[in-house]
Image (cartoon, rainbow, N blue to C red; front, top):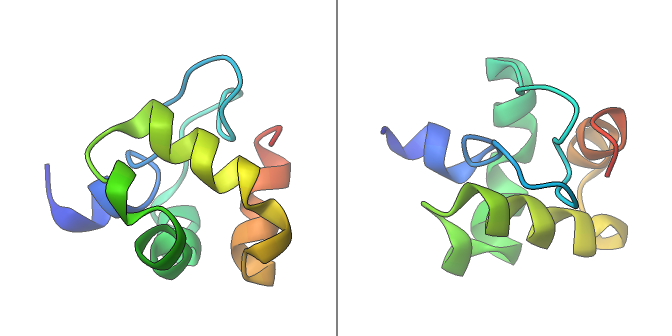
Length: 75
């Protein structure tokens, strides 16, 4: 997998409690969360369910575009 995918939401292909449980993220959604994934959840890169849970757990700290993506996917 390429780095963008790992850093975002294939980076976000989730478990039940994760931010993107409803559907797969679009490339635009992945890009919206790339920076947040790198800065807040870097240790979870390559582990989609953990990444999703991390982003959801840090929702208050996410950039507005990423927060909207997480909320749109049930996080």
